[in-house]
Image 1 (tube, rainbow, N blue to C red):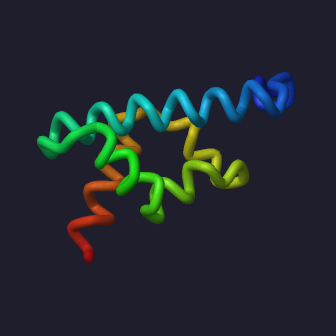
Image 2 (cartoon, one colour; image 1 turned 60 degrees about the vertical axis):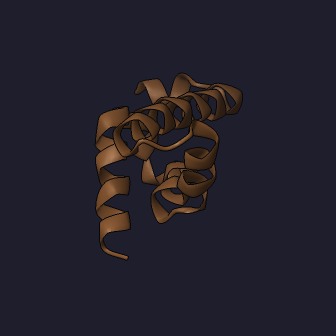
Length: 77
């Protein structure tokens, strides 16, 4: 049995929210933006949407990987 099956829905949601916090902090520093502004942009992005999609399992990735994914997304705009 994998760890995913032992986590409650509340624990999964907490893990995703924590990951968003870490990703936004990293992005804000790298892109020299205010964390509050960066949070709004990240949540509205395809990467942010994918992170909240439990089936994608993106929340299992590290914050730096997710930050890089977001950066690739915004370069493609």
